[in-house]
Amino acid sequence: MITTEDEARAWLRALPECDDAAMTRLERLVDLLVEENQRQNLVSAASLDQVWLRHIVDSAQLLPHVSRETSLPWMDLGTGAGFPGLVIAALRPELEVLMVESRTRRIEWLDRARIAMGLERSRIVGQRLEMVETCQVGVISARAFAPLDRLLTLSARFSTSDTIWLLPKGRSAQQELDDLRKWRHVFHVEQSLTDPQAGIIVGNLTGRKGKTK
Image (cartoon, rainbow, N blue to C red):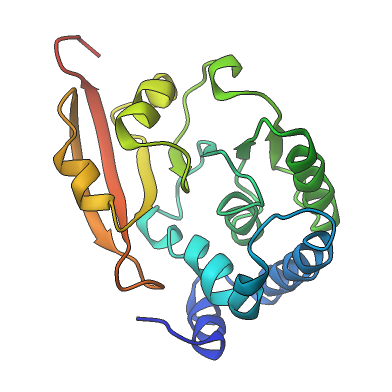
């Protein structure tokens, strides 16, 4: 378990994706976040005291579940303040990261941060998810976006049987997975590295029960 800012930075440095350029992009993100948080409530002010642990590493811990050979887009639902979308893009700048966000001020913030970090392959999709044009993606992530069943109902159309789902769910992870009845899947819960009481739902969706994929 990672518990301090020093441990968080050390863990990041050990990631294969985290070279000096990636670390510079992440440091830029932190500076931008702290500045913008004075204008709009992107994250709780208290969490900025542990920003590397609670936001950067909490997002980056999703990467080891994805093959470095993955080339299909990564879709992050309800990106909000940029987590995990901007962190993933900072660490995998060659990957097309689609950050779906419908709130105007958040869209503006995400685009400013993306440009400032030099993330040319990333794109902010400024629409409600229901309005986003269907496409196939390699990874779907969502941090506190919606309860699991509703999340799948809204976003299954972007998934193939090979798409990796990475869904940080806090304390509710195992319960939400246990309650999932309508879907065929190969999901399991991984322990969060940043919160001993949190879990991440990881795996593949194979279809809706009663329907063919």
